[in-house]
Image (cartoon, rainbow, N blue to C red; front, side, top):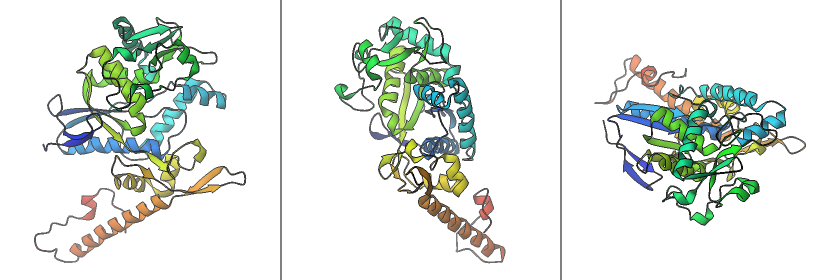
Length: 373
């Protein structure tokens, strides 16, 4: 096997990958929060880490890819209320839609796809350990991680501590010892219809602790690669490090961190204001899964991609569609590529001779699923 190097977010350098268990590499990539169908921005990490697993296997490594599904979250409660359906029902519906949409990418499934709601017992046990060790405290049915108890907090995002606001609202701010502390368990609020019993009362887990529990369940307390979009570096991944190493020790959790760049439109992160124009399923129907994959891999995985879409608005100014010029250009490049391979194949089939020393395999053996020219 070749020695591999990656750009590690934690160190800020390109470092050699040295698996902690022979040739086995465990990868954990943060998946979606299932309150709506995924857009192409959500599809990018699925493509990046699925292809990373394939590449590692090609190089002779035994790679295991775990991609979680966050199926209990404030965004799910809010979206369910808007639709007038139970939050658990919406989460199940959108989880199924996520699997359907990512199946369209034709990259297969991760080795494990744990749901937060399937990991509640492990989450509660992890929080209890943090409370017992002094890393966490209970206030009014909520449980918060005490950031001051963890030396080195901020080492992933390299932010000054006073700039690390968790964005948990004014109600949480009144209960916290410090603004930097973050929620591990949230007491049930009026109107929240999905909840569990815990030592601190009825409630549900915070977002960050879910991933810490799921990594242990599927990859153990120490594993190799943790990934996700750059927007997750803070607070999500920063908090994962603190609570996981607070519970299991400073030399545990992920050895390397990989973060893919974001997809934006005219410099602005993708949002609901774009309507359904950039839903993954819609783009694939328009240009095909292969064109979307090609578009992603034609950019460095850490780079920001600006789609610069030509949006189509209705009479009231709402986005109802888009002209997918960049995706269509990727599709044309693929056609050119496959046409070239087909011409080489035809040339050899009719008795042509390749240049001296060249090895030109048939197009269909070189790339499965070659298009008809």
